Length: 176
Image 1 (cartoon, rainbow, N blue to C red):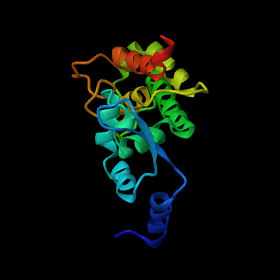
Image 2 (image 1 turned 45 degrees about the vertical axis):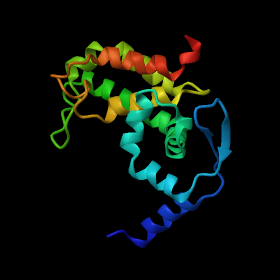
Image 3 (image 1 turned 45 degrees about the horizontal axis):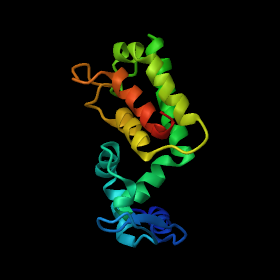
Image 4 (image 1 turned 180 degrees about the horizontal axis):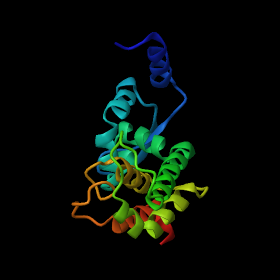
């Protein structure tokens, strides 16, 4: 059951009227500014994982209001710094052989050590001020949170170094 304080926080989040999103209209190159509706805010919250995957796959945020809201959330400085901090913590723990925690699934230490340069680059780029593309942040977030991905799964077909390097490049694709 949801508590009253949780409902108040959720209603404050979903009823906030200050934000505007940019949306593409049909097949034309026209972009319009629109206030997201409650259903868009709910979709951005409840379908966050699906939206993250869509953003990571390169779907433009202006495709839908829910995608635009999710992209905005992912690219906020606090979220970027949080992802960078988690990556750095994983790098530190991979070097410390005594940091094994029984209560959680740990990252694949061998893969983390092998990809340390790419993971550091990703964390540094996330920490840098300035704009970033939601595409890259979504890739970094999925890399960090996907238990079946190369960060945690030693049997993954993808190399951690390749995924981390790709995410770092996609954070600022206009700089390449």
